Image (cartoon, rainbow, N blue to C red; front, top):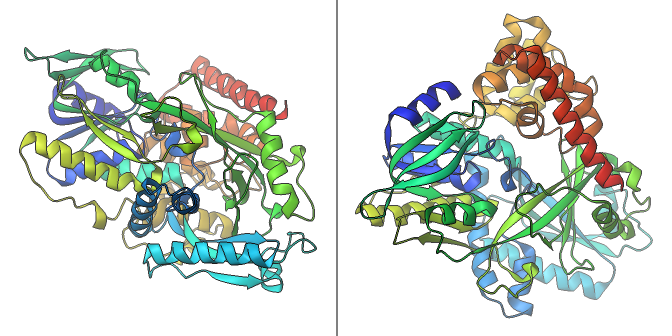
Length: 544
């Protein structure tokens, strides 16, 4: 993805649709629109997936909690959410097999009655899914559970219920959608923020006044229609277009802590079905570590980045502690992250825990701004379809949605066993070979081709981890990474899994990016210092 060329297109061309927001919903809309034959632009004020879309629990699921609430509270709006999520789960996994896959989850139980309750509930979840692509769940004996997850406290354990959902690398999945959209002709650019709109004589939006956040240049993007896909920032864009619109978004903060893989020492994940705040908590293996979350708290200040705080570390470790024979300690935490859910709230008095993850497509009749509000990662494709269906109604068109069967970038001819050929061809470690196949899919050879030009790029960024220097150059050259955080937090996931390792390789990353992007010494120093301060700040907040 060439940012300079795409910026030129944004300045000089007129588009059918301009999509504001480059997360899952925005990139999903861009791909859907392009496949329907529209000329499309997509911009994001920051990096692709830099907000909610890179800070999820990494699950593709219908939501077992929503199913329980549907029946125990007779809240059948939740049932619709579960159905949509389970329908989309199969498609999300199928369309990017290198980035998404089935995941086994164990729900430990402490009595026969508890086991019956969860076994019935999770069988209903399987039945509701009607999905033959994932294995069916079952009730496991204590012996079977301990063989799969040996770190559990067997003295308290009665048994466990096993079920399956999907797992994905959220930021890279979003990037694959962006790449696929560009390959269908979409002009995509990160770090382009909307400052305002221009309107025609009828008050309809005709152009977006934007700012290139890297060069500080202002320009306009002309389009027939504008689609607002900015998640928790949706109200800000809506009010730029029409200040009279009522606020619709209630941000909710969710955080995760990251612990060593050995905490569970299992390729299975764990679902903790009861917490003191009425939620469920997941402990999920990811990138060689264990991600534990999430929480749900009201978040008033949408201008600030949410981060992991000491009290949240204590809550999540305390929730995990009763299940393990060796409880984790705060000093075991290697990283963490916070994110915001863009919840839809018709009732401002209702707790965020009671709000569904449903979505809505809003058309402002005064300005013609289309806003995709709410939703969740698993249903991103359905959300995009609903949005484009509304757009087509406005434009008097009716083209089929083709995204259900469109393989994403890197998913073409994917074969997981290709890691063996890569290992042999390039003389790499098994961990690096598997990492490359699971991040770049069938395009892993494109990354490794750089090592043939410069043998030094085959070196690791951190000795004990699988990431290569070549990935930095590839991200800057082909994936529109323009800051060290773009690379370390989202192209690879090191910022959210290991803060110390992130800081260890930061000088090398900045040196490689600087050479590729033409930074001078002052810029490279500023990039290094600013990102160091940010990560150190995360560490201080988590430690209290």
